[in-house]
Image (spheres, helix red, strand yellow):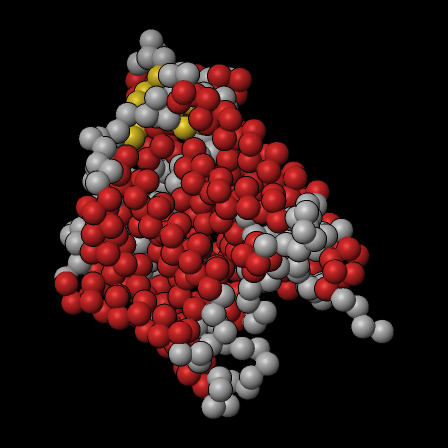
Length: 453
């Protein structure tokens, strides 16, 4: 018996809501296709993939390693406040225009461990969250990419981002950057399993209560709410609305203001910087683009434009089965994300290229997507196959050379040495209440009561 697409959707409880005319707008149907019923993944394969994802993330931290170092806001903001104050005063405390309820909550979980193991616990939790974001990208892209290897190319960059690692290395403070990429796929993910239907709203809740930048996805999520009427969509929208109300409410009321540079929203300047900085760094990584230079050599800019135009050429000439709507949305949001971050500050930080790069990969893969009904080396599918393999080899090389990037976390002191210094200082002065450990600009105030013999 043949089951129609509508009947299949009804069985899954994901029936799109039609307009008055009885048909879904073509654009919405293209952006939010009804998911096909999938074969359940063997639990041990999922577990193995999760372990590999976590291990791969942890392996990126050099120096004293991921278990004996702590840096940036993980130290000066989350860990310091967690060990010195009650969770009631830390979890719901805003900072610099953000509410960080997600990472602060994870820090409180890490605080359940002895102080010596808190940085390790925080790093492991960060790696677990990164693996969750990768899984969201993998399953969220299933309606667009039937081939598992293509979905792997969508998911793996979350763990192997070749840009911004001088400022973000498996820490809770910068999780919201790859989290923005996860939010992009949460706008498309229509899970067909009970696990997925529970996970999608929960991960959305974590993301929107951790960063105000998720507001950029409001139009896309609104389109989903119009196109898809199911409980998963409603719960995602509810969590999103609650988180954005909190984040934006703090800014509107003046309760939580962001300290920034001199904003520059000149569209010509922002677009030129996107082409000169984001494009080449996304496709060639910081190792080849230069760690100490903002703008790569012009030859890399030209090469990046050639890659983008080549993908467009493959799609236009009919050599692939392009997902035009997905490619357009990903490219537009790549530019918008870059412009929002850079424009609000007036300058470019390495981490600001991370999300635009991830969305650029989606745009390219959506353009060169092969037709699953055509054999890879048949004349009709050969060009698309070559394009995908070439892009995979390029990204693989870029990920490999940028797997471990220079950072102050890798060159900083060990956590154990910091604790030893606190123990010596606290026992040398019986009147000392706390000892401050400082490196670069971050610090931790160690309570002396925890070190006195």
